[in-house]
Image (cartoon, rainbow, N blue to C red; front, side, top):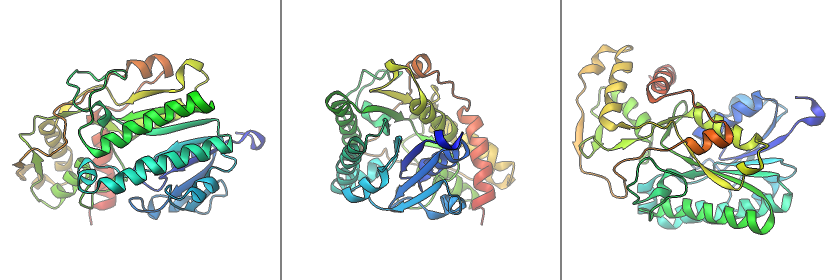
Length: 328
């Protein structure tokens, strides 16, 4: 990318799991990248390899602070808004903070982006927005009622984005992420996602606990598919592709029992004893939906989305990364 054409992208939550992978990708593509993060859930180690790169800027700040948002969006062409407090259980335990970050912080970023003349605002939406809708696969224009405070916050994001597009003319695209997993996803903490948590437990020969009978199913989505969707959303020149939302998924579903089977299989290649680790089944978790499966037809037809990694392909990559980076 020629210097005079070099574009600048702000990635909020850029030290987190998804955000740091986006930082890697767009630095490698020749963009100037600004990372805004307060390190509540992100880690400096995820982006430390960029610190000496003149095309990378780290701003340690909080999206709940409007001054930080204004500073971060200065002269940015695009915003990839990943900063949020994830986790349904966390939002049930502490709805106030989830709302403060996910709604008030989101609004701060929208206003700052509007005022700075940002061309396009792409944001992390969520499959939780489908709520109690039982129809499968999930299609973007058919949603139910939210089942958790977290789901409410992510739906409110979509409503705000739509209003800002209509009222102020800023282009927005929401990406409804479906159970994203992959390298750098944190296995530690009370609200760790299921895949890295299970991997760590298996590596320690500890029995993972499945909520329910293991027959709940999810559209597990490898990180590289998500990076691809962000790039397509950011760079599309199709006028019909903006000011809307897209499912961001692989378009297939697997049960938690399927997941456990694959993890055992792939991890046993590194440590045969893992094949003998038993699984514990516990009660269902409040706020969880039984089944999730995305239709990705809209993204395919409008953005040309063609995800490369199935659950199995992504798990092989992820397991290798975890074994290399977290074994000790």
